[in-house]
Length: 189
Image 1 (cartoon, rainbow, N blue to C red):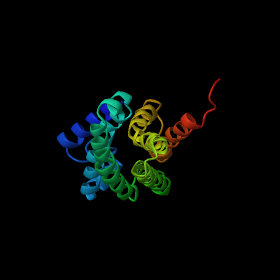
Image 2 (spheres, helix red, strand yellow):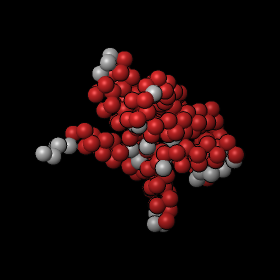
Image 3 (cartoon, rainbow, N blue to C red):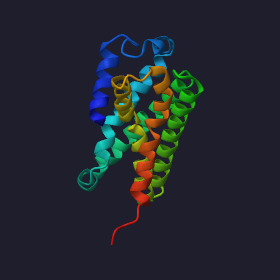
């Protein structure tokens, strides 16, 4: 799904006029903040494409240099640029303060978990690096869960102006809870 959302976003934002595929109330904000929108879409798409491969034990074992290089692209271009642009976009997110905070905290946590993962690996703490990367990629996957919840809310006939601020939190909070559960669950004997 990560690769599918990245492909959709790349094609949609490269082939169609900016704002043509979003809710009409969001179009003006997208047009007024073109650089932030494009930077966020394309950098975040890079993170969505690279991220799943970084969890491959086979890649890490057989080609550690490739893993490191992809990690630099993932964190340096995908997360850093995508996160900064996402933080800028959060300031004008549709849905008012609830959406501003939902997407703003998501962007800050995405940047923070990426920085912690980088710091851990630079200090040789592989276990901590892996945990921070699980957290980070769970936040990257907010792009996927957002694109599940939005169409679902439309199919259910729920008003966009009610759902979007809720989805600004729902797209990432459960992902992060699951990530925490993964490495905090009791081990079975």
